[in-house]
Amino acid sequence: MQEIQEVLLTPEKIAARVKELGAEITRDYQDTGKGLILIGILKGALPFLADLIREIKTPLRYDLMAVSSYGVSTKSSGIVRIIKDIDLSIEGEDVLIVEDIIDTGLTLKYLVETLKSRRPHSVRTITLLDKPSRRVAEISPDYNGFIIPDRFVVGYGLDYAERFRQLPMIAVLKPEVYS
Ligand code: IMP
Ligand code: MG
Image (cartoon, rainbow, N blue to C red):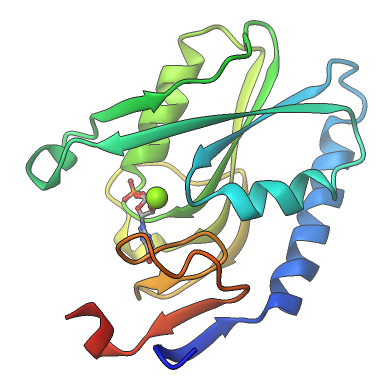
């Protein structure tokens, strides 16, 4: 694709890491006897969730949630609007929130707090990408695919203006695309 300036993570590198994360999660949850509920955050986490569930060998269910932040001015408050809630009840269950990227951390912090109020047995978080240099909220993921520098990335679910989600790699676009 001609808009791509640089590939940060190839499809092969992503697949290998997703396999490792799946094995780690399988180990961590295999003796709970409860089964796990993965909650994918739309839309960006969809490809990651789809690949990850097939690398987890312990029983699981998954559900989807869509959120949006209220806009730039209120974003620092960390208030997030739930556009689509999950259908499953998580009371007493082990929950794993699946995100595409943690940037400021405000979205994930809100999600963890909201889901904890529903009395699950546990809540953990996994993100494919982490930009720790941009963190505002005090939160770090329990599982993390890759730490990346402070650059705007697209692909494997991540978008710029809803485009480029279908790219099989994580990439940085040419500056002219963003302007
Ligand atoms: P946070 O609340 O700042 O952590 O926001 C996380 C959300 O911001 C992600 O779910 C993405 O939708 C979006 N986001 C943050 N950084 C990027 C990026 O580099 N590319 C695409 N989306 C991003
Ligand atoms: Mg997003």
